[in-house]
Length: 408
Image (tube, rainbow, N blue to C red):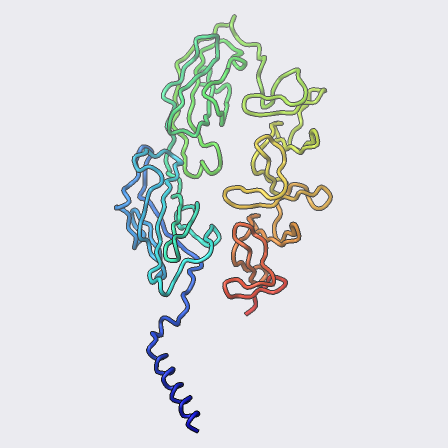
């Protein structure tokens, strides 16, 4: 009986000691699983420099601002990576690093990896992230491109050697791409558009005597450049008179395709063409040359980059060859069918993909998914950076089964 009383007394002491422990210390620290940052710049023009970090608001979205709308973390510091003394150009994307701190490190913490799948930049583009301990996260991002009009070439003139050699000056605030029109009097004789050069030989088109001039302007080269860069004003050359005895016989006109006695691959300007022995060119279709696939437009020019044919997207390398397998483009991963026997070779795959005995999922744009994603009503987890589906494991306390499905 005495032994029982002693045990009861000891239990009472332990109970009293337990009550003296703060309740908060028993609570688990919660992980900040995703981050959203709102960012914006007051309108900048070409030639402007970046505003000082001290001018940014970190609690509202007006003027220059970088802020969060979450009580778990807050902006504690801003640092330009792009020099704030550098003059901006059309298309410039200023880069900044923002420091985030957990508002209460005893309650919330940054844990695990942070990538584009769990960091959202409203008003910019995610670049990278890194942690310092569990209470600090550094996020680097770029603001949206600076909008404006490209500068016009300052000078346009005819070279002294021969006739028809047009030349113009390059400009700093430029896409490096130009439209150039040849005139005889007030009539347009030849249009050369999206030329990536600062000279052009118009002589093959000067087939009549008369007074010639040309105009040149800076233009956007890609679809993305067209979203923020407007064409410049025209710069006009002096006039030059071409007498009858000096007119061109028309030799060397491209008319959309090169004129040459060669066969096979032929380069004209910045474009490549493929000519057959009968003088015809491969146009508006695929061609398998030396066991590699190439695509040509309606003028016979080899195309590169993303191309859509029959509602299917393909990616052509800079040398024109068709890409297959996994490929990174614009900070996202895509899978292009490598099989010549199953499906359409080179076609961008959408939906579930079985690769090396692992499952991946791409959305309607073809982009590989990362993190928690809902597919056909079920929730799955795709490992960030790698993209494969998690199966038979637990992610941050949430179990997924052999099919990768998380069930409540």
